[in-house]
Structure formats: structure tokens, C-alpha cells
Length: 252
Image (cartoon, rainbow, N blue to C red):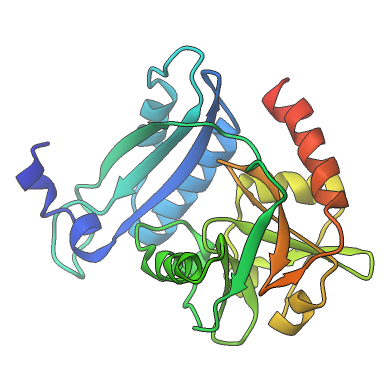
């Protein structure tokens, strides 16, 4: 497609697209089936289209030998009016070469964003990332690395660019999908391997956590050093899980 044609796509005009981000480790894509299953379901639920052909095409994409990075696979609503059916969806992929591993250093600093965010329908990843990026930009302008998002009910959703876990009184917890959290594949891996509990998590409860860590496909599992300027007392769970993730997923 040429650039002018793409401007009529409803992904550009209205943010009507869904996507998944696949980590590429040394030329090997991680969690391929899990990501593309999520993309297929998101496209079916939000765009009412069958994305299986796009997903099969994504599996066949040539990847740079030995390189690491992220592959973002999108399905868009295609051209049309605001309420027209998606009769001509499009699919495309963007590859960005970069390191994929826990962020080095002593951990990230988090800021709680107090502006409520309306979660994406079904918790799917959509092309409308405005609220997440606004929160992230605000946090960085105020000297923090990341932001914590909450929904209008005051429940924690996630970080701006990844899922969030916390440990409080020995309980490992993560926001339930019903709060608007996205069902990320690394989140799912932690739930399966660490016995974490999905729950409705308030800002006050998060503020009392002894440990917090963040997950996404690019950084895997990365510890949080502080929340709103308060230094957290431990990174034990994140350290053990990150080492296990590296051994079982990255180096397998």
C-alpha cells in the first residue's frame, strides 16, 4: 500500500487496530502461538474479522539471523466510515532490533498516575495508546521511569508499558483482567510458574507492597526500586523469576 492510501485506514483515523508484540531473541521469536492466538481473538472480538491469514503470514516472516528485538504485528480495520463493518482489514508487522532483557541497574522508579484510564475493551492491545503514553510522558518529565495506571474505580490496571506484580504480606499478586489489565504472555508465564494471585488491587494496597516488578515481552521481568519516591525493601521474587525466565525461555 502507498502512504496516501494508508491515511484512510481507520487505524490512523480512529485508532481501530489490534496488535501483539513478539520478542525476538537471537533470531528466535518467543511465545509465537500464544501471541498470535491473542491477536486472533482480539481481532475477532473488536474488529469482527478473521485474522488467521495475517497470523499465518506473520509466522513466515523472515527474521534477522542472530539478532534480537521486537516484532509488532497489527491487524487494522481498513478503510471505511466510523460504524461501517470491517470488510477490508489489513495486516502489517514492524520489526525493531534492540536488546530484550531485564533493564539493567537497581530497578525502575514508578509514579502513580492519578488520572483514571478507561481500559481497552476486553483488555486487548489496541492502537489507541494515548492514555498510556500520556502517563509515561508525565512520569518521565517528573523524573520517574514508569507510571502506574488505574481505572475509574480506583483499581490498578498495569504500568504504562507492561503488567505489574506486587508482593504484600507474602502474597504475590497482579491486577485481575476484570480491572482492565492486559493478558500479556509474560504475565501468564509468571502466573503459571510462581503461584501469583489475580485480584482487584487498590492504589493504597500497592503503596504498602514490599516488592513490585513489571513484565512485558521486551524486558521480560524487571524489578521496581521505588514507588512514588518510597524505596521498596526487596527484589527477591523478581530476581528469582528473572533468572528462571532467562534459563527456561531465553536460553532454552
